[in-house]
Image 1 (cartoon, rainbow, N blue to C red):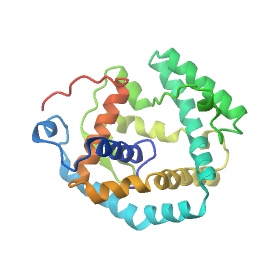
Image 2: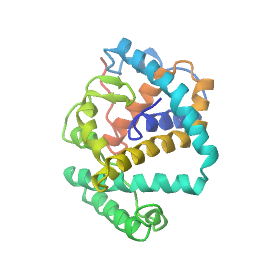
Image 3: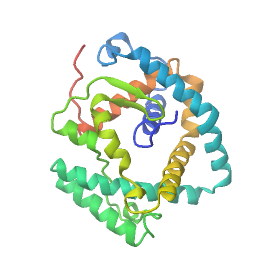
Image 4: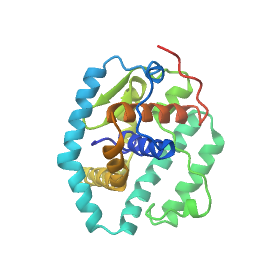
Length: 242
């Protein structure tokens, strides 16, 4: 799935973790499905299938070659570099959500990693045990009471919700392009981030492909569970029955 690293690829990682914890390949029960707002499931499954084909024929082969050629320390540096931009955006959204402790911790991470970590290539913030809090505009909207709305799968970008779709253009715009005054370089760094993120998930997605009976439902429910947990800081209310 050629998803944005902020949404779909992390949903895959979340689904893989859930699978390992549960130790089973069963799909959710009908009662669980009743809690999911998926009124355009036909369209979503079509887009999911399209993304799967793009991943199978383009992204996965590229990511596999990338992983085979690029050493692990270099791949970690790429991850750290882009995480540093995410941390800076998290500072803004933490302040918008009045989470001042989160904002302070992420601010220290950005300062330390940008200066001592050569622009974020090294993650000294984690070595110094500075907690990393992930916050984005979709979470900020949720914090102030905007409902998640219907589940939707976008081509190339992957799983989202109506609320997150509104925030998605802004969230995706936050990255190296904000400080690098070169469109080709900015596009190249964004593409590298996608390939690097996909390479980091090759083993997890292989596990899903081999075991999960209905991958669409598994990724959908894993994504929604993760987003609700993020909005409510790990303590979401019970999802309403539809």
